[in-house]
Image 1 (cartoon, rainbow, N blue to C red):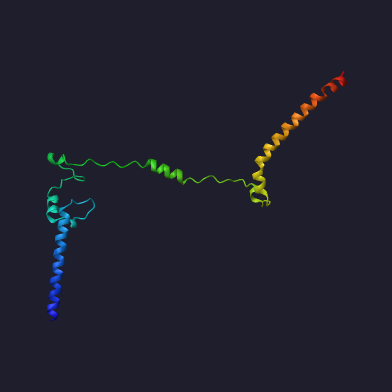
Image 2 (image 1 turned 90 degrees about the horizontal axis):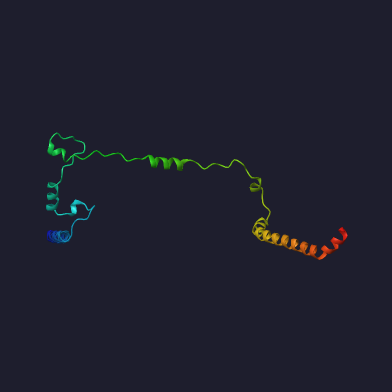
Length: 154
């Protein structure tokens, strides 16, 4: 009874394998291989034909035959890295360190320092207006009492 169960399981496994193989072949027939796809997913005939049609590229070998000299690949020139090295050297230069130490930055600040800083701009405007108003008052005073000065100076 055990042998029948084992053989039945083996038969089912073979059926599954055949179905998977048929499914894989149908999928591969409907499309071409994408770049980077491993060769094991392609059908065997396609791999064999591709190997037969590979072109010979001579990189390190200097051929003596004229026919082979045409297939020789020109020597590669190394890429210029001078610009990259300059950029790296410039990036490696450290920022200059400030040698002078400002005592105002080191000393503890009063609790209202930020309020004074924020109000400083408004105070500058008010100071300008105040100076302008004082100048106007002085000029008015001069106009008003200018005739008295004239009589005193005569």
